[in-house]
Image 1: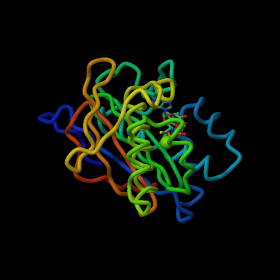
Image 2 (image 1 turned 90 degrees about the horizontal axis):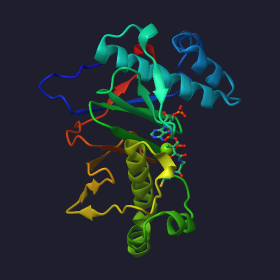
Image 3 (image 1 turned 45 degrees about the vertical axis):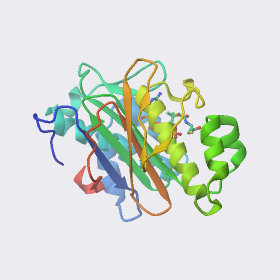
Image 4 (image 1 turned 180 degrees about the vertical axis):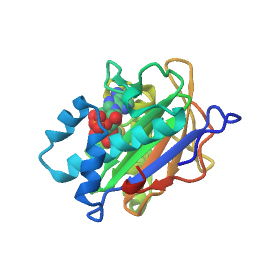
Length: 233
Ligand code: COA
Ligand code: MG
């Protein structure tokens, strides 16, 4: 994995890993061993193998990135969570990361500024959800867009909004209709946060049928996602 360059202190990096049945059980067993005792307990409670696997891969990916960025011994990586559940690295206030998983993708964004990421597998939508939860202007834009792009636009909004509430760190404690996303000249316009910070957005493609959005205070987004394999972790 690449390391941050000192001359670009606030840029963002985005990583993705695909869960698949090509990954051997012994690889999962080895990655499990790298988790903290608390996370080992947490992931062991999952009933479905896919839930267990994506959490092991997500945690192992974060560990690997933090080790690479900070040269930390895995034993000294201590993850804490804010009041809303957002994880961060204890004693390292200037390194931020965020993880998301959906379907067989696990993604992670890392930056020296707060960052949020969301990946979602696109499925049939219920427009009532958009009506209930999205901002009125977002719902109206969806209602009036060409039906052939409505599903795609819904998941654009969904993942962008979730990347924002995850960057802020409040999750769903931040009402989803308290801010509105809009396309300006083909780009998603930045949002001014309650704290006076400006949040920028960028989307990436990992696979057809998925949406991936990243939100950060840094506007230095990478051109591409870095794909990694379980064996590289
Ligand atoms: N802020 C930022 N990141 C958070 C967080 C918070 N407050 N709380 C948890 N996370 C991180 C954790 O690393 C978590 O991984 P873990 O469960 O292995 O610990 C990860 O986000 C989960 O992200 P994701 O895979 O995208 O899960 P999600 O989509 O189910 O939930 C939440 C994301 C927890 C932040 C929250 O927004 C939620 O419950 N969302 C439900 C989905 C929804 O209604 N979204 C609305 C979109 S319009
Ligand atoms: Mg999500």
